[in-house]
Structure formats: C-alpha cells, structure tokens
Amino acid sequence: AALPAGTPAPPPAPHLFSDPSEIGALRRNLLAWYDGCKRDLPWRTLAAAETDADRRAYAVWVSEIMLQQTQVATVIDYYNRWMQKWPTLQALAQASLEEVNELWAGLGYYSRGKRLQEAAKKVVSELAGQMPRTAEDLQKLLPGVGRYTAGAIASISYGQATGVVDGNVIRVLCRLRCIGADSSSPAVIDRLWDMANALVDRSRPGDFNQALMELGATVCVPKAPLCGECPVKQHCRARRRKLFGKPTPVPDVEDCGVGGCPLCPPATEPWDSSLGVTNFPRKAAKKQPRVARTGTCVLERRGCHGAPEYLIVQRPSSGLLAGLWEFPSLPLDQGLQEEKQREALADHLRAWTGWPVVAGGLRFVGEVVHIFSHIHQTYVVYSLPLDGDVTLDPALSPSRWVTEEEFHASAVSTAMKKV
Ligand code: SF4
Image (cartoon, rainbow, N blue to C red; front, side):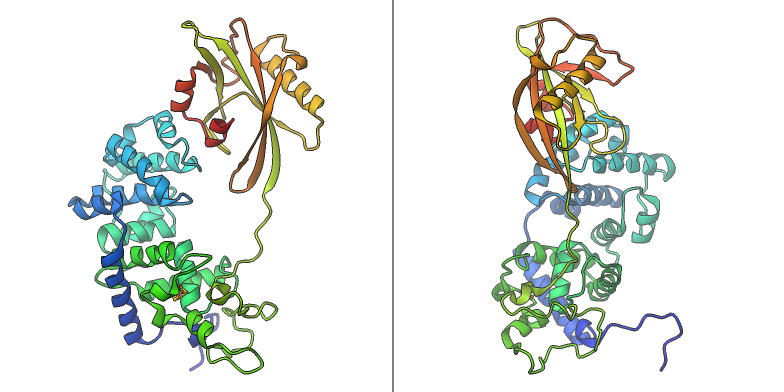
C-alpha cells in the first residue's frame, strides 16, 4: 500500500531488525552475557540496592552526566566522592556552585556539574522533590537532560521500556546492520533510535541498555573489536560480510540492493575489505579544532608563613570553563612574536594590578598544550615573583592568593593544573 504523503520510506530490510525470533534471541544472548560479564560499578550497585525511586533516579542521573565524555575509570572516584557529599537531590540543591566546581575540578566539561546542580534545585523547588517518572518528562522538565540521559534514567531506574543511543550503541548497531551512511547525520540517528526502541528488552530494559553500551565499551570497541567473543555475533551483518563478503563485481549477499540507499555507505566509499567490521560506523570528516594561544602569568609572593603563594582569578560565569579559577591570563593574537606576547601580557597585568610590571620582569617558563573538545589551546607560561603585596580591584574579577595545596583543592581546570 502507498504510504501517506510526507511519511519517510522505511529503511531497506537488510538494515532493520524485523524478525521477532531474531530479536528475541539477540535479547537473550546479550542479557546472558551481561549477567555473566558486567563490570561492578558503584552506580550499578547503588541503583540495584536503592528502594526509593527518587534516590535511585538521582544516583543514575549523576553517573550518566559524569560519564558523558569521560571514561568510566576516571568517573568512579568522582562519583563516589559526589554521592558521599550529596547523597540526595535535596543535599545537592543546597550546595554552592563553588563546592560543585571544586568537586568537579579535573573531570572536564565543567558546565555539566553546574547544570546538574541547577536541575536538582528545580526538582526540589518546582517538582516537590520528585523526579519526573518517564523519559519524556525527564527530557522536558530537567535542564541538561537530553534524550539519551532521559532514556537511561527511565529505563534503569523505573524499568521503562525505552531504548538509548550513545556513541557505543551507534557503533554496535551500525555494525550489526551494516549502516555506513554518516552516523552523525540526523537521518541515521533517527533510524538508530527507532532500532534501539524496537530492540530493548521489555522486561529488563535498564539491563538491556547497559548491556548494549557495555558491549560497545568492552567488546565491539572502535579499532580492534573482539568479534570471536561477541555474544551477538550470529546477528552481526558486518561480521558476516567480513567472513563471506565477495569482492565486486560479484554481488554480495549482504548488499542492500537498493540504489541510493540512505543507510548504505556512500557509493564513493565502498566496503574496504582491509577494514573488516570497522567499515562501520562512518562519520563525515570532523571539523578541525580551533587553534588558540593564551598568555598566562604565575604571580608568586611569600605568604605570611614563608610558603610561596600564587594569585588566581575567577573566570566569567558563562562561556568556556565558566566560574573556574586560573592564573591571570590573556588570549593572544596568532603569530605574535615572543617579545610582543610578553609586552601584551605585561600591559594586561599592569592595568589590572596597578603595579609597574615591565615586560622584561616576566620570566618565560614554557608552553603547555591542552586540547579542549574543539580548541587546541597553547598556554604560554610566564612567572613573576613579587616582593610586596598587590591589592586588586575586586570590581574587575574576584581573585585570591593560594598556597600550592590550596590551589589543587580549588575549582581549577586540568589545563591550569598542567600550567
Ligand atoms: Fe561488533 Fe564484532 Fe560483535 Fe559485530 S560481531 S557486534 S562487529 S564485536
């Protein structure tokens, strides 16, 4: 029958899961593997033991926000400290942003901590302390909670049969169904959500979603997937194609066969047999990160007990590294000569401290490179010992003198710790 006007055509069958018995087998195989191999992680233990739905949802939510863009191994320690300090939404809602930033320091993407705390405040003040109970409401009502996080919280904490799509799931699904079109394009992402929602196990959705992500993180890894150990290998079309694929022009059994298929690799980049299953997923070329240089100066004085102290200033409350502390810094124009850099930084420090800082007094220490997600940042580091006190105009930006120990306990970024 003809589809109503405006309805997108369904994807060609080779890219779908349409056989109910295959879906059932895939769920069973994946869950059995997960039950035997899953990693012991503190948020899993908490979610399994917690009987209160709000506390359970909060515990999952914190882990999901921390795990966005950060490795599991790094998150564990931060997660434990966070949950110890703020075991409930109510406790987090009462924390100060400074405390949140201090605990988050080193975890990167700092706005995540801030948004988590803002959302906790909202749940307490506007939703009577009760977490929304469905993925749809979580996404709609909580700032910073997108479709993925909402699906993860709802499936793991409430048992809602809703799928999730993150980087690991994208990779696994694209391989299972030979999806080679740009996996960051909205058309492909929409199809993957449909697939995740169709596949998710109805009685154990939270475990199923975690199993799919765990498979991507530990077996179906980006570069050298362990297909021989994979619990769903018999459902994997990329693997079948690797084992039985024939070089063109003999038609491949797994070829989609639909000209201009929206999910196949583009005709200009056909299957590369040397890549095997890692032909999938494919992404359009990444944008090059922006290159930036920043002059930064470590001002040092003798503190009252003789130990050195360093001056740190607070960044503006919005934008990159919002509200974090750093050594006085100044963005530098590209291609500026060393001498000019030094002068620009001295001018900046002079205007800001009121001290007669001269360029020659700044000692060049070295350069520190730090890659933010989209910025290739080089800090050109100088130091300046002071033999008197400097009083700063508090209207310019908040500042304080700290010992080395206090510096490390402050809300400073990893880049500044490197400096
Ligand atoms: Fe990934 Fe290999 Fe398993 Fe396919 S068989 S899902 S490519 S690990």
